[in-house]
Length: 144
Ligand SMILES: CC(C)(COP(=O)(O)OP(=O)(O)OC[C@H]1O[C@@H](n2cnc3c(N)ncnc32)[C@H](O)[C@@H]1OP(=O)(O)O)[C@@H](O)C(=O)NCCC(=O)NCCS
Image (cartoon, rainbow, N blue to C red):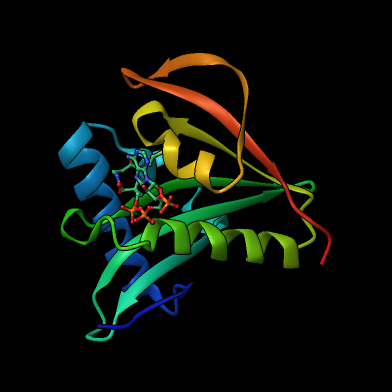
């Protein structure tokens, strides 16, 4: 099965992505990051199966040369296939095209390995948000 990783094409895909975020963060972890009101401002990326199902997503908020990555999720049954890494790579490509110098994110500690492997470095101390340990991480983007 092929999976395409790209910007959400329409409101239907954006809605499916937000439902997936709510299923993963809300259902599995009891947190609701998509409800912060920033959705109209974000670049929403999706991983879409060849039958059109959204199986992964993340969002990018471009802010004065910094690209803030958030709500990276992959459907539980599709984890371990490289989709998280592919979404991260596409987000970095989009950030570079938009002229960002770096990508920043708040990594949940249990998922930190994903970002370590992709070249992110921790910035600052561990902090607790929504009852989960996090660390801020950052990656400088090479000029295109
Ligand atoms: C975290 C998450 C997005 C990873 O997606 P995924 O598609 O399973 O990840 P990938 O298959 O692309 O893995 C990429 C790399 O990260 C590593 N990795 C993935 N999840 C990891 C985890 N939880 N802990 C440590 N390493 C992890 C993989 O071993 C792999 O390493 P490699 O580059 O050496 O091969 C997914 O597990 C998820 O949705 N989790 C619940 C939501 C969540 O925690 N999101 C992150 C919030 S910061």
